[in-house]
Length: 146
Image (tube, rainbow, N blue to C red; front, side, top):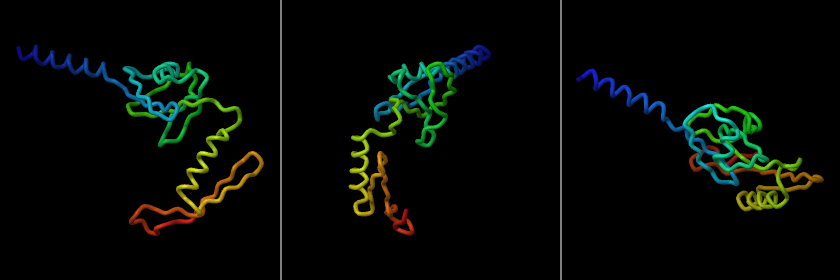
């Protein structure tokens, strides 16, 4: 009887291991989409399908919030770990940020940094310089030059 209980407990543990869910998060249009998998590796197509990333968009892994490793194609096999982050975004034709988005970002920077920001134009490029930033309360020094 005790032997049967041990075997039953071991079978339950094996079943739990086999059905482990891997959650990843894919940022699409500025919003995180949670995608669940029960296996790894997965294909780029599986990630795209689960998150709603069009095949024409780029898909890349994020490490510490920054893209890394280049574009993941639909046929690429990707090892995933629970909690990992990815980014799906439309491909740009040589232009990193469209004009409206650039205006929005510049306005936001100006509202945050005020007179500490200088904006200039060099042909098609917009140059933004932040003279100094205030640091969190308790930091020494309280602000730093950039």
